[in-house]
Image 1 (tube, rainbow, N blue to C red):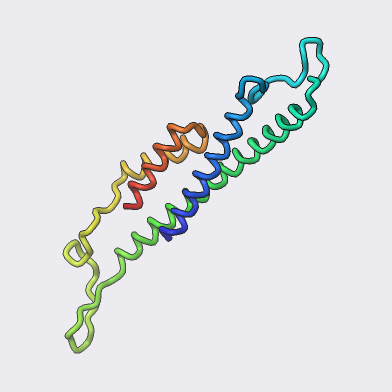
Image 2 (cartoon, rainbow, N blue to C red):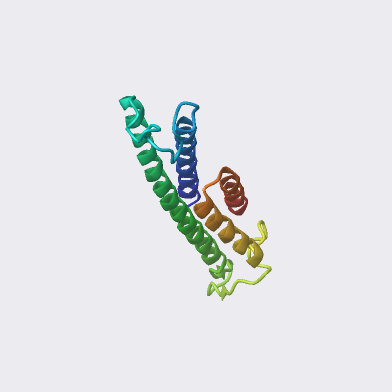
Length: 156
């Protein structure tokens, strides 16, 4: 349902916020960064053991969060597909006409289907799938913002 998709998007946003916080911590001026070494110029481990522990734990947590992010993005994609399939199925159900003796079933036509929202066309679906795939692979803030905007546009 729409609520499930929104909950998954919220979870994705929370994971992205935590990824940003850990990245900022690791890229602080006195830290070695995301992939910097934990040894000094002579090849010995740096003296600050707490820094080594913090960096190792942060890098491990960051790797786990990236995996969680990919999983949540797949869940969002599956939920979006099922949501659209359900909406498409709901539009294709036959309409019964009341006030008749035999309750005749009339197949849906363009006049009997609700016209509140136009169906999503092929180009929008392709853009959505491309956007989700780019966001899953790239994991940059710009792609994720575009993906969230695309998902929200599709939900409307």
